[in-house]
Image (cartoon, one colour):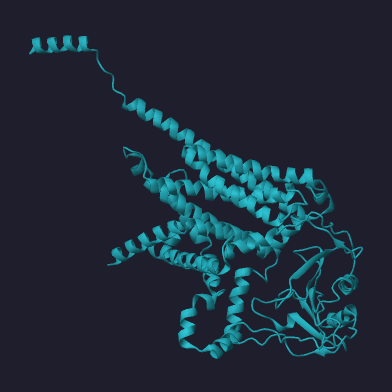
Length: 546
């Protein structure tokens, strides 16, 4: 029974991984980039100034407040984002008044020059946030449909992780067994190692991902077991919100943000302020909240300090009242998003995300490697299904990273005045990916692998060169300035390009080795044929001897 159960789990693991493998690869690689989406956005807006000021946060607040009073005086909701370890620029945001027929207006973000307090005009781009959103909203699809597709794939991913543990009785001993350069065993060991080394991360990221849209996926259960009022109470229990601040529409002059911040610094001796949220701005009901970087995986009320915006009185009531279920859900959310993570912890998230991406890729390659000998023996060549899987593997495992690199090329090369420029950056990415998915159809698969690996090498290595030719924020400037966040992007692209170059070199070496082995095998199997005349003479001699 055990063998039968394990065999059935093996079958389930194999086919689940294959059916949703390419979409999971897309979700993992775009979701992994999301851990640095703010840094990517800064790179994709090269008009932003490098940080040269030594201004205090008090002075930055004064500049931001002055700008908002001039340019967002008709808005009731303001945000100020101070330079932090992830984004070095001063930014402000506000919600515009709703248009006719709308309940809420659009949210506007602006980057400010800290020295002058003036707006920095940046190019139209969706930046790193587009890549981040793709991993759960996909693209070009209705949001509701995307959530269900992503939820279905995430559930299957969780089951694939569980069945992967079940079918490997010696999973931890297998972790220390790696048979490099041995074809199928090598790919199997690679898949096992990549699966085990980040196994807790794989469990956490898939399970927590399902909790994001809890009431979407459990809609049937909640509809049957609760009425509308009970459902609203349950949602409020798990997703508590701050008390809404309603403008009284009575103008009033607010206290200076810098003055209120002085009181905040007495409570926060480490001065880790990240943003300021202003509700009912310049209204008698004005409220100002100073928010610092997260200090806990779950919600920490001490991370926000609120004041009455008119009197400057400290408000002791916490922003949100969390229940146990709300704390658990918020904890999983923070783990999934890495909200609490420092720079080092964020790099750990990146590495484990890339390991998960490589695990999926190795599983897809393992599927074709295992079946290749039998497929090659067929008189009419490999089956359509096998050829389709191999084509999708090439176009996704190598083609998708190339398409993502071309997204950055589009950011640098598309005309700045192009209408819907941000949308066209995404269009370039998906058009490129579509072409790279089709390309393997017209090439021998080994050559398609090598050619796309070489193309990936070129596009990633030359991206810093294009950045040098199109902006004044190239490595020669950023390294000299000590802006490692900006320079880190170019250096990371070079590192990825060199990784693809190494992969292409190893692939080429393996193909040369296979070709030489085939030639030796053919020579060894060749039989020396004796000419017919000599064969006749030998037969006569043999018959005479007899």
